[in-house]
Image (cartoon, rainbow, N blue to C red; front, side):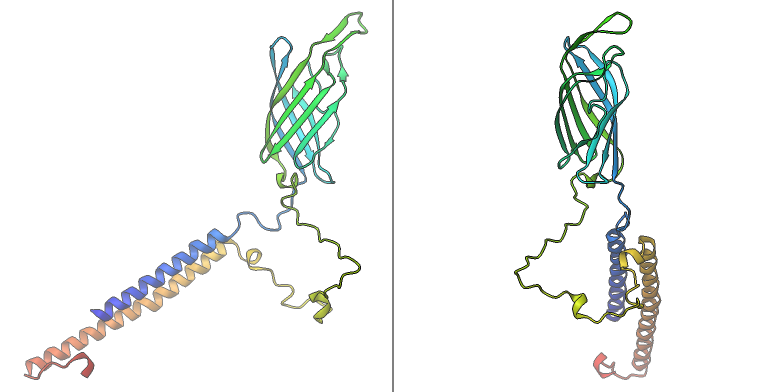
Length: 271
């Protein structure tokens, strides 16, 4: 029984190690490929609220496009729906610094057609998948319109939070951009690089064209490999258990025959 228990313990340990390896490798495999391209144009959309000087509110729908194709990133805020207002960023893309925009803007738009926004402050703050937009607007008018009517506007405030629709937000704070190498001072001694010390072949070899493990193996492939290891452990473990059981049974029969013949039983270390 001691031999059988030891064999079973060994088999259970092998199964546990194989299952743990499968779970660990699958969890370690990144859900997004390391070489997935970044999308430098980030789009946010969502509701804003226009509040006039009398406290009345009007719903708006805004879109903010953050363009990080060049440095620094810029933000353009436009209105998709709503009345009595125009683009909070005055129809222009303004520079962002670490996801924050703060700019004083002049009046913009056509007051006679109620597509106008007065001079005021625009503040934008991007935090991950959300962005907060606030725009103040000073009173405007009166001005004489082409139909002979006078147009005026009270002071208003536009504010709200928009959410991410598409794009790589990490580009806004450059968290996913590798740091640039610092220049080496001309007077300091320069350490030779590995490329200069090693005589690399002119043409790529088998080793230089091999892909790293995270790119060469997917989570499904790693799971299949672990499953194959599990099957191999079973094929090796079960015959061992059966062999130990058969050996122990045969030894027991031999001892029973010795007892029937009147011979004293042998100790395990004498067999």
